[in-house]
Amino acid sequence: MAALPTPRTDAGREGLAAILSRPRRAAVAVDFDGTLAPIVEDPADARAHPGAVPVLSRLAPRLCSVAVVTGRPAEAAVRYGGLVGAEGLDHLTVLGAYGAERWDAATGRLSAAPPPPGVDAVRAELPSLLAESGAPPGTWTEDKGRAVAVHTRRTEDPAAAFELLRAPLYALAERHGLVVEPGRMVMELRAPGIDKGAALTAHLRETGAGAVLYAGDDLGDLAAFAAVEKLRGEGVPGLLVCSSGGDTGESVPEVADRADIVVEGPAGLVGLLEAMADSLEEWAG
Image (cartoon, rainbow, N blue to C red; front, side, top):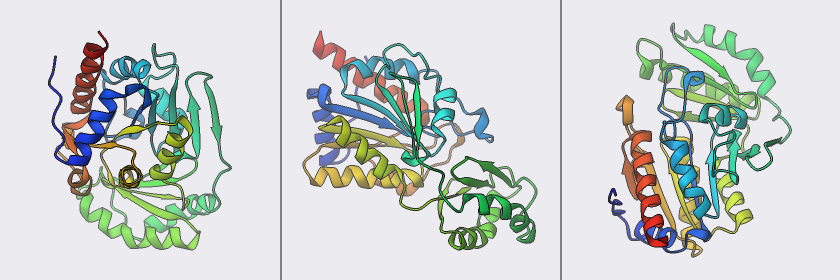
């Protein structure tokens, strides 16, 4: 049985202890890309780590909630994650599009808020804006339905391309009442007031969770980190996990610095969750 790592903060140690001692009141919530699934050049090629669904299936029956919180459309996370019909995940919830979409494994039902205004206009203007801004070869856009993302990972100099396009994309978003969510060599234009923190908080209130583990890897996860930190101040223990590096060797310091535990990519997260499942099964036995 793998040993559980010791969180580096008092709040993290309290959060882990609460999850292990009162699992029926605890929730585990995780990001998808870079956390459950390795980062890949084409988001359509992303697939959950082979150990992700099995370990979530071990944990879920012992917890009050398991959720995937992602900027992807919920349906995409469900499909790429292999979550349909997974044994033991009857009560899994996927909060997609930063909480604007929801999929419940128990019913297979997908619900969604109305599409945000402004996205259609951005979608129409984006090709000419990229051309006028001198976007280098390899720049490409991803249509997420409720948001549009511009990726520079495939360009010759991804960081330089990212900086080149930052100002025009922020200006485009502002003109149409949207915000920009930056990430690892990607900028996503989406509606304001919707983020992983709000989605996570609402879900925890709904389920009545008394403790939470949240795992993420990128700037979009900082809102969820902030939500867990706020809940800690209200007496709800929480554990923050950063999925850092992994196969790409990349990491986001802003996320790693605020985490209680840092693991090496999706494989490291799966290892952490397996150690938790081992501990819970040992205690129950």
